[in-house]
Length: 97
Image 1: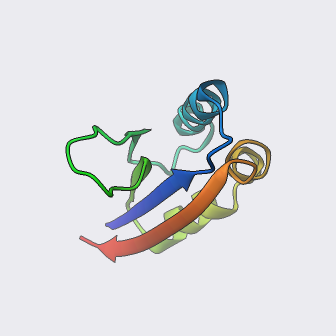
Image 2 (image 1 turned 90 degrees about the vertical axis):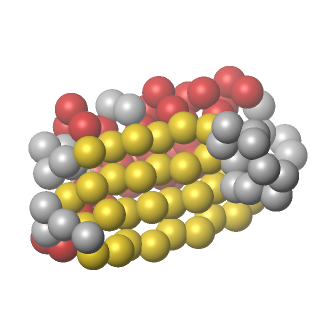
């Protein structure tokens, strides 16, 4: 199994509405990409200072399934239209479980 983890911080000018739209649009992806085995997105809980602001955690049965998600047109559109305009920093990793 492959776990894909992405962390974001937002620009200072990112609005609450823009951030909420990211969540709304990302949560549509499991219905469009059947290769997603598990999918969790959301804001940092605010427990520790210095954390990233937002996380995406996705599980896939195989590298091939992850690549379908990575390259899927709807996923790429969410990135281009909703995430890139407000992202200040991004970190990502894929791990084998």
